[in-house]
Structures are given as structure tokens and as C-alpha cells.
Image (cartoon, rainbow, N blue to C red):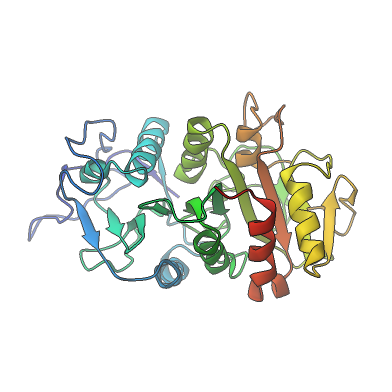
Length: 351
């Protein structure tokens, strides 16, 4: 883990001058991410973006390949931002993806706005739009114009690499369903050894231990959690679908709203019913699950807790669940995932 104490930020400039020293992010000065970005909005304004004809799925696959090389388990690659920088970065990401492209001029130097044919993507890429992670703060996307049909839905992947193929699956689901937002965490959940301080333990990284600070579903210090929080606060009707994978003795899909209780009438219940209608073996958290062999109901998920109005998402349960749906999946559903996409299209209302 590298704590971000400083990083120079020159608005509108993402290339260091030739011969300039490379900064050590562990000791370099912190970026002033709260500075104004300048004027401009929409596809006009200051142009600090790259245009690319790549598909989101190909881009995500390439990003995950780079993540495997540099941000994998035990890599200690993640740069943990100060709280103010985390929140400023998250606010800037949301603003950019919502259309204020001039904000891209004040992103950290490793980040750029990519304009794909139908999407805006904020990602760590180089000047040729190739993945080039250094902070490992995640990748975020939204449609440039609302697709038809569209859904007020954010699709999240907090455990890239570890929950194999959820990255590609989530990207495809986001595109096919016309969802509003896409969030991909920036590093393997076991990348860094330091604990997050949030409640709960896991055997994901070896012996049963506290969640790690690199675990995007269980760490409030990360930009991934801050972007989720910004979206949740921005739109009280926005729903969230967070995709996970497991090798436990669980059904093909274990569905939850992360409250520990079950309701057939909520979004989680509607998704479960749609999955069953498509032949998927479904478990319901709060109605037969968790069990000793399948205890993956997401009650300590920090994104779920935030959206459920927890006083402290790191350590406390929320009080108002229903907008967040947590899906644990066996490998088969993560590979042959069209039934999940079709179920999401049936369960989450279109506009």
C-alpha cells in the first residue's frame, strides 16, 4: 500500500516534460483535486479527452490484464488517497461522466477521459488510450446520451481478478441493459496487506482475517466507495447491482439486498424471481440462507450500508435497504451469463 501524500497536478497536462523526474507517489506532494477545472460542459469545452473506437468490453479486458500484472494479490500497488482527495476525485468522476468534460483537465495525471462511441469512461490510460495504471483507483463509465431503453442502475464490480470474469460480465450487462453507471475497482482485493478497519473478516486472502484496505466492497478509504456514495446521494432512486463470485457450496446465484432479511417484493426479490424463471438455481439471503457452507449475504458490504443510510458504512448496518442488490455467483453463471442479463432487464424497470 502506498499512501498518497502528494502528487503534482497540472490542469490539462497529462505528460511530464522530457527529462522530468518521476515522482515517488509515497512522498510526493498531494494533488489539489478540489481546484476548479475550468469552463465547459458536455462534449464541448476544454478538451482533455481522448477519442477511441474501442468497445467497453475490450477496454475492460485490457485494464484487467494490466491489473493482473501490476495490481494483483500481494502487489502492494494501491495508492490510498487522503480522504479529501478521495472525495474530490469521486465528485470529479461523477461530474465528468454526467457531461462536464472540462473537469477531465483536473484529473490526476494518470487518469484520462476516454470518449467511446456511446460512452464516457474515466480510466488510467496513456496518451494512446492503452491501460497504464499507477494509482489503481478504478475505472468508471456512463452513456454519453441515454440509451433506449435505459435504466437507473449502477453496475459494480468490486473484486476484479478474484471474482473471475465479473469484470467482463458487468461491462456486458451495463451495455446490454442500458444501465446508467459502471464501476470497476482498481486492484485485486488482496493487493495490500493493511486492514481496512471495517467490520467483518474473510478467508479470501488466506487465513481468516480482517478485510484489507484494497478490498473495494469492504473499505471506505477507496475512490470506488466514494464514487458509489456520490452516485447514491446524487439520485435517491438509483438502484445498484453489485456482482460477486464464489467457489463455496452455494446456489448458482445467491441474491441479497445485504440487510440479512428477505422480501419477495423488493428489487432483490424481483431479480431472484426473474433468474428462477430463466432456469437459474437461486438462493435467497434471509430465506434459507446464509448457511454454514454458504455465508455470503453481503451484510458487511460498505456500499450497501452507505445506500441504506448507515451512520458509519465501515462499521454499522444501514437502516433503509432495498436499492442495493448483491449477487454471489458460481463460475458457470459468470461464464454463461446471458440469463443474468436477461433477468436484470426483466427485474429493473426501464425508462
